[in-house]
Amino acid sequence: MALPYPEGHVCFKRSALKLPQSHYNYDAEDEKSFYSHMLVETVWNSYASSPRTEPCNSNMKPHPRSKLVTGHAQGFCTTTFGVWDSTHVMFGDKKDGSSITRDVVLGNNHNFNEVRNYHDGGPVRVILRPVPVGEEKDKFMFIDLVQQIRAVYFPVDYKSGPQSEHLCTYLMVDLRLRKGAEMRVPSEDKFVFLPFGSSVGLGYRHHETLCFDVGAIYDYLGVPRPTPDTQEGLYKTAVAGQEPITLLNCHAVSTDPTTVKVERPFIRSIALDSVLHDNFSVDMGGDRSSSAAGCSISWSMASI
Image (cartoon, one colour):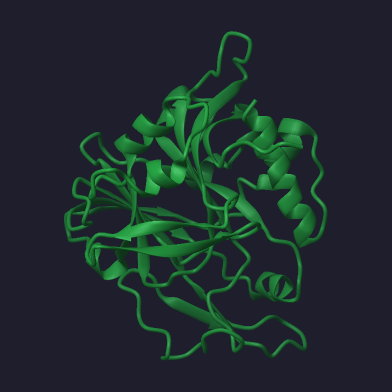
């Protein structure tokens, strides 16, 4: 089965993007709600640290916005895991992150039984998390890389077309379907290679933050191209400093007392396997290989 390019237009059934109203005040069936939210696709049952990676103690440098929560699963498991308590998605009008006007705080999973299952080879659990967008003047979006991020979706059309009024369309930036990307670090005027994983996407980079030039992403991905080169279009441009996606040090992104904070608790929705089933009647398997394969099916079909 042929795969599409990792970025561009994708479609979902609006009815598949279900979320309890009491938690997020989000309803994809509501046109205003659809356009006022973007989606971040994350792995929710993984861990930031363990004895096999970085010790769960003071060796982990503090983060300016998130705190490391440690614990272990019930039963005979004595392995201590660390997870960041929250992931911050921020909006501002300056690309260097010095002027944040909105800070959306996404609570993360603290169930260490689920983390233990992932550690022992269990399935990768993936959710789509609605994020309320900033004001029109907030041209840049920032995501702290304290969780594994697989994709980001920007709303395009509430109804995909006359024959597809039950579908909605997003522009997708995928962080999974290629080996990685060279991203510019503006503060150091250099490029660094960030590897992508086929099942977990962009892994933990505890003290770095992705910056998205939202307008530039719409301008580039919104125009169909027969042979797009997103490495050059999204991460590298002919003129230095105009890259739509760049990498910042997390400490460079700063909030202040005037920043509007929006809290969103952790819930296991919108589960990607449920979205796939509702869209395409695809049943996800119970291991990591089947999870990755199922998601590949979703992108190829959604891009038709």
